[in-house]
Image (cartoon, rainbow, N blue to C red; front, side, top):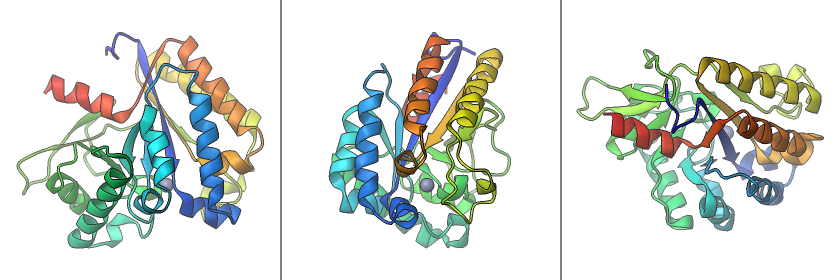
Length: 261
Ligand SMILES: [Zn+2]
């Protein structure tokens, strides 16, 4: 598979969610400081990555979203991060997605093209219906019968004419973690910069070997409390670039999928 002239691809997804910062650090302003820091670090790289933004963050901190949109892609990440979409009716999911798209557009003037479902992609067919009806190009949700191809592939629901792009079965993905997030099952493992560096570089190695897409999701509020994470993210990005990855974002993958038809 050709990745824009590269042998493999790497996406950094930045989840911008001040509610999570408030919940786990006690101060929503941690999101502002950490997002600015991360965006500054990313200036070293010739890349447009993807920022997944909560609608309420766009409403309360529109400047953060403008910073993101100045250089990177911006997608919706729900309005409030709660509750998980599968617990909501079609109508409530439709409202939530529409409001988060509008809040982001009002903040930065960018028309949102995609939605990253919170809770590691929890969504259902109604999420896909609402995303299609609202004109989104892609939906990051774990859906049954997702296409097998790497990157984004077409997904259909029976009662809608237009398909929507969803991630294929992602085999090369990772996320940062923090011991503060106690209700998440993997937090028994304390944050370790050394472990993260080893794990994320190995992820890049595997994606390179397979000629596939590697994705890493990071949370600015975690950068604020995880010792050494800022440096690890920088090292991992330099490593991906040195290995020849196409550093990219989901809008760009969607463009390629649309061009392929
Ligand atoms: Zn999130």
